[in-house]
Length: 87
Image (cartoon, rainbow, N blue to C red; front, side, top):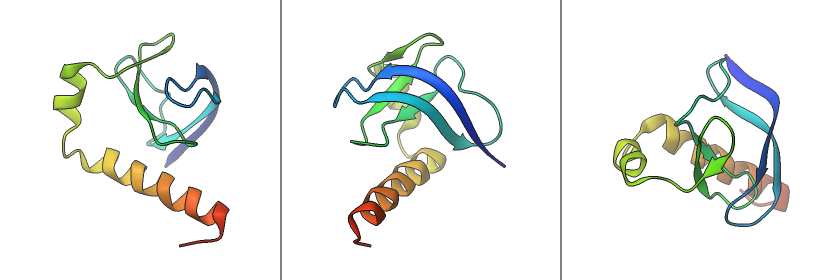
């Protein structure tokens, strides 16, 4: 099951677009330490439980090669290409 929910996260730390919803694998809301992918620019950030933060060195090490994260980035890329009419 996938999660689709309203969650005001504030602006993306890279592109500044307001992020006000979350979609993810599984059916639970993001928890402290969850990795977030900006739908607009693809920037990876960490959810602190209250706001977005740049990835910590520990988070970067933990996510290296994470298949679920790679799948989310690929899904985001496909979504953005579909909006532009390319595949």
